[in-house]
Image (cartoon, rainbow, N blue to C red; front, side, top):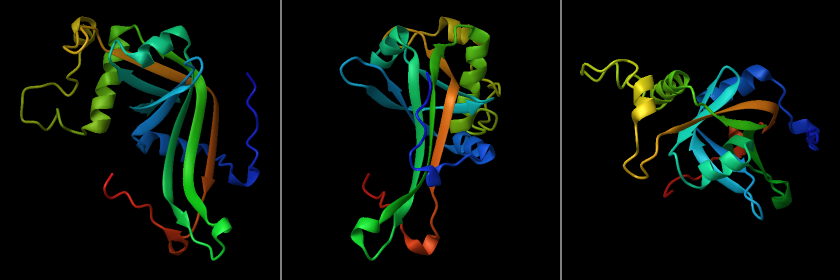
Length: 189
């Protein structure tokens, strides 16, 4: 696959360190999957490690079904920073940073590796919870045997852990000074 170049060249971000830092700190990405007549895009919590995206989910459902049929995906992470003010309404704009990754989502079948990834996801979303909980739990509460034997009460299946190793990464941004922005209204969401 060859990727069509970004048409708005002035918005390209080629700074790999900024892209890497953004992917590492962001918490939710949108995975786009081929679903036939219409694409299927779903938000997932994810982990960015060693140049790959990792995510997990139930062992059933539409996402799992579609990924088993065709693992080619687009994964998008973005942050809206605000609306760029302008006296001419048609010149108003959005300040943002976004990254799109294209690759194959591959299920991790090695229980040890899946356990390592799941523990890293737990630490990302609940930092220090297991090491500071005052219990006798390990800092790595998810073992390979747990991954192998766990079955969800919702569907009876085990957890699925996936890895996307990007074939292509694109990033765009529109930076603006704080004084030029109207902050996004996130109240009531």
